[in-house]
Length: 69
Image (tube, rainbow, N blue to C red; front, side):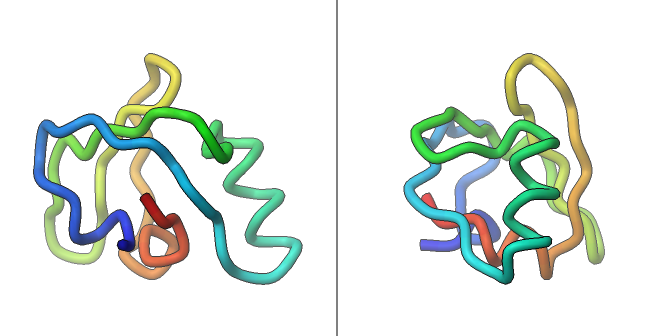
């Protein structure tokens, strides 16, 4: 399921990252890697704020849809 459907505060494991090569590389540089943990902290408007590798990162809903947990 896409990251946008995750419960707030629940830790999830990234199963797959979709999108073209540029999108995948961008998300990997931010810390989104297959097998890594991600926790949704809040989802406001068009952004999703997550915790990845002890960092808080805001991604657009469109990008969050490409991260499958």
